[in-house]
Image 1 (tube, rainbow, N blue to C red):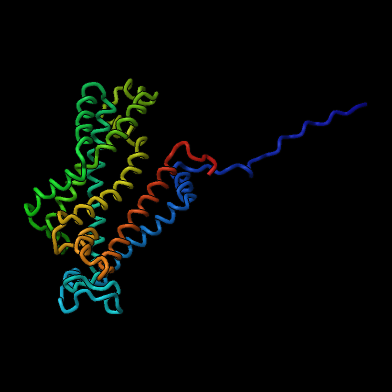
Image 2 (cartoon, one colour):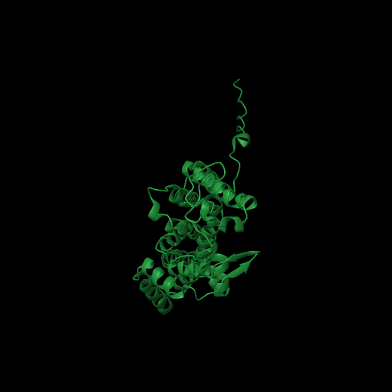
Length: 316
């Protein structure tokens, strides 16, 4: 008599299941896998440590102290980066100049991101007449060469804002002017990106359901659409810091940037172009720091763009 065997039970695969990861964990893994972004991140951290720890070693008074008997001294043990045309220590000035350059970049991007996100969100969500008016304003701003506008506004407002005392330091009033000028002239591209993102998201089912439930527009924009549009905003903000640092360097090199004695990397280059061969250390160190900072920020921006891409590798 034939016996029937009991059907074998399915083998449990519980031990082989891939552990669930949050969205931020997957983004972090994708970012870490981006080799150049990781290199840029460590370079950027090194520069931040340089300008932070350096200010604990050198005082701002020392960075601005001039001794003409030491003018144009080459790099030495006493002055590792040499001295400038009036005997100031270049190492100390790159520390404090780096702080101002980074502050200008971060605050200018904060202004640009706030303005660009607000205009893009309103245009993309409401559409119609609001969209037409705001986009025509954006296109009008895009038609004006930003560098020319920077130069004209910097020249016009130069010397009209007094110096500012903050946290025991004296900042030239021109720092505020440069921050506002760069921020108010660099929001246009972000506004168009945010607008296109809002146009796409506002037609999705969860937004239509929120409208049907009577949720106010302000809450829909801030709580439902904006969090889903953060990826392009974060990437644009990261890359915008590098662009703002370069813009400050442009106008400082042309003599219309931050006024002395406040130093920036760009203003240090302004005083070096007459000594390109005689004293190359005047331009080499601030120029190198600008290159490393901008390059590392661009690498980090590329890594964030790939990490925040929803079509990225899902197996990470």
